[in-house]
Length: 232
Image (cartoon, rainbow, N blue to C red; front, side, top):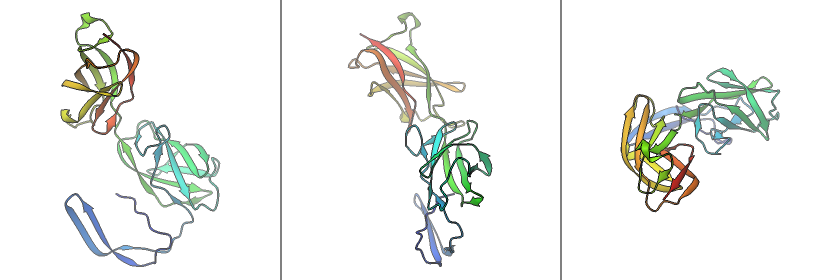
């Protein structure tokens, strides 16, 4: 499924349709037909995360949906929002922007989104729900006798959940760790049931002190930072 935007001034006609994906190209004559609009408003497919203002949504995140060309201003009382045809509570409406929460139990993948304003229904658009972000559950020296603080040059073990999507093998080449914004060398990634243990070395050039942010990434998916203490 894809979202396709048609210019409001487009002529009503049949058109040649081509879809390219990687090195594959599919074309079909008269496969796309533009009809006169029967709806007075539309939804932007650029649904963003309210916290990050980025087009990346996970289950439980608050999302911002923009409504265009509505003759009736959307309000919390006249808007009903549907995800896969299931009514979902609206958290707030401001300047044609609708704020809602992606259900915490929603599976990753495509979701059909539409709204009704005073009984008038929009066309549906596709929203992508991303897999959960990696989450650092703990960060401690690999040697338990070394105490709790991290030290320069020390081997550290990170326990991480959701490092990869369920059922997928972890590509260790895509795993990255940063401490205070600096890349950290990953020594090993070990799968432990539904968690992963990542062994990293604290760089000798790392800053020291408390409250240093530590993150784990798998490709473009990056965890929320945790704060750690690093000592000489």
